[in-house]
Picture 1 (spheres, helix red, strand yellow):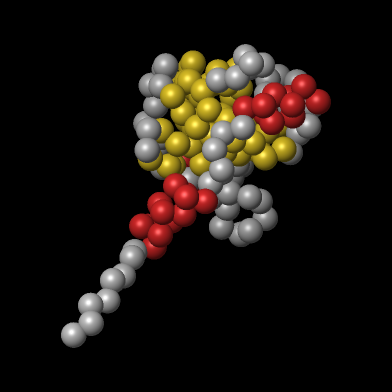
Picture 2 (tube, one colour):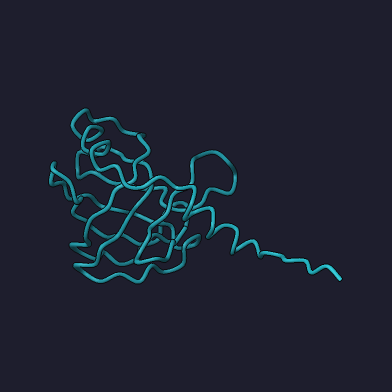
Length: 136
């Protein structure tokens, strides 16, 4: 008798995320920031410097935090994630995180958003990675 192995969708997504997602490229973020290139997809890593909590937005409830990018440009950027997609992201000040999303140069402060999956295919999906866990 032949045994069939099956993988759940969650297991396949986790496998793909660990194998298919390129690692952080802080230099690309620094270049986008220096040139004011809003709309640039970035993957960065760094540490949480401040938690902003949650607030209602046009597209659902959002959770925000500031992170210091672990690179030579020594930037602090606000990160926004839609908790309707990701659920709450358990963070502490000082914790290391990796973020994939869209960088926007904003006069009131740089931001990375679209840090969640995109169900309609209008935008590349992103994530917030804490430890070995992806929130997307």
